[in-house]
Image (cartoon, rainbow, N blue to C red; front, side, top):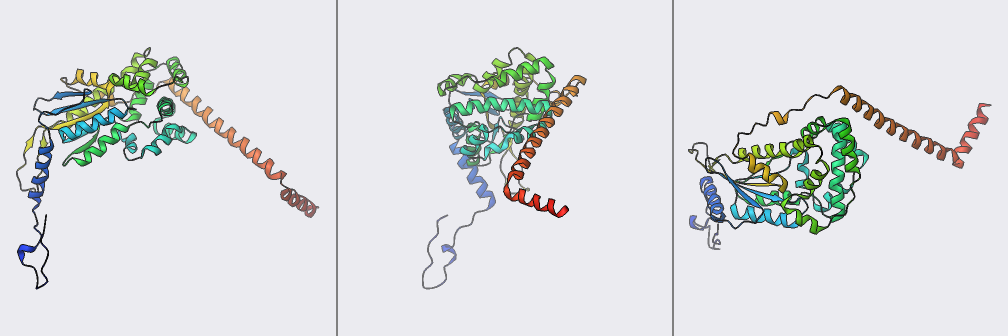
Length: 359
């Protein structure tokens, strides 16, 4: 608030002091600012789908391509136009770190798939699910290398813009990665796992930025996945269709009536229909629309089936092979290191002295 300067003749009177406002007034001012910015008839990009709930809440779903600059602009414009109460993004807690990383670090991370990442994925998800996660990361890294663009830019823009909107909450809306991969692995036979792994390993087709923009009607990463898993309907169900259900559930939860901000607990609580912005891959939008007016139960799609006897045998064999290779690698390195040390003149001199002393 503006204030006048004190005179040199004496202490300022009360009229010269800065005006303090109450918490209630501060909340009211911020809320009014938000309402003034919120457009009653927002001008939204073509990639936005509007859905409503029974109590009048509105959900604006921005369908994005995960490697697209125009998708980032769509997200920014939508949040600025509707001034939402909640922003929901297609991320889970296992991928939340990408929100605060800078583009250069993410680009480097996405391109580097090393033994440490493989070990971490196996430790977190189990052998088969961990290997599957690394193969899918390879798909993402392939696109990253081709385009020179880190994934998840639209989610980072959503995070930044949500922080600028008063009283706006930020929610993670995707099913946890370990659950998705464990359910996906359980849905495949051993032969199907081998075929899928081969398809992911052999990915090498060049991708241009024009290809990405052409895929705005169907997310590029998920389109590539759909092409590779087309012959595995059970896998498509766990990776795409089940996540459609989960995202629908989370968006509907976010779209519950929002409580108006209040300065103290003594004030009566009032609520109004919520405004929600969802940021998801374009491939999920049709599924969310399809499931919007149905009662979604996520308990079933959050359960992880126990591994079969064959799966346990394969897991044991994979672990034995992995640790065997690591052990053999350590043996070769140590053997070579010993040879190098023994070939050093100083080492040979010391060994000769020890031999003479022993005699």
